Length: 311
Image 1 (cartoon, rainbow, N blue to C red):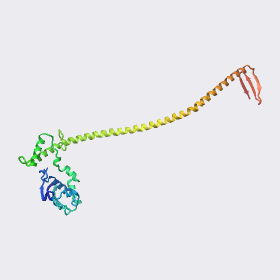
Image 2 (image 1 turned 135 degrees about the horizontal axis):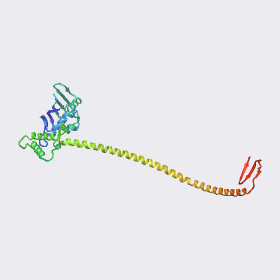
Image 3 (image 1 turned 90 degrees about the vertical axis):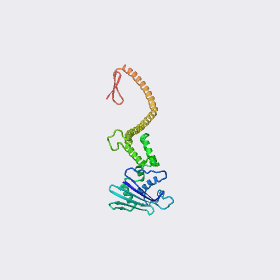
Image 4 (image 1 turned 30 degrees about the horizontal axis):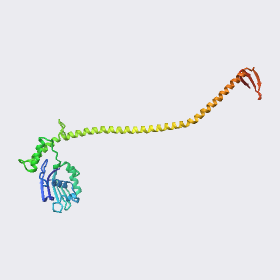
């Protein structure tokens, strides 16, 4: 979209009427403070984005001083081979967008604003303000040096009317040159030293790569911490099970100790019995071999140190 002419009716200090033309390339709006530079830009924003039926306070901010009647705006622009004329009347709340030479007409705000959005390639006035225009306070001058001093002088002459004339043209030329320096490397791949924007893009790409590395390392650390916590929980479970077994072992010590004492006592009795048996065997070994008939009719044979029962 190429803007060509702006016409205002009852807009702030531009009352009753005001008109200005735009040239190709960059356009510089210069003038002293309170001369209406911001009003021109705000009027362009209203023409391109505002709904004439809107009653928001921002619309009232463009009313002519001392006049309560809403304003009207006409904007002439072109896109490719097509010419457009836009008319918005915030008093009658009407809108009209005409396309020539096709003769197409848009009369309702929704379709007209949608067509303007498609032609402009921007959806919001914030994007338009950030990309299509640079206010005086937003102007970023080059670093200290001849280029900055020359641009400062040209801008000062353009705003004050000093110098030998042609200050605005000179300022625009210098701005074009600074823009070219800023954009080195954006389109032309054959460059030795990138411009500030390209250098910033390369730096951003490097930082994004570093960010990816740090993000992966962080994710791995989080995974390791989770695994460590899981291992700690498992260790606590094993320690709890071991403590339970130890407590159970302590509980068995008393009964085992009692059984040990009883076993020792029984062993002593068994030792005495073995001792008595040994003495008895000795006495039996002195007896001759004999046969003895038991009460149940079986025959017992005493032979040596042993008593053998014969069936």
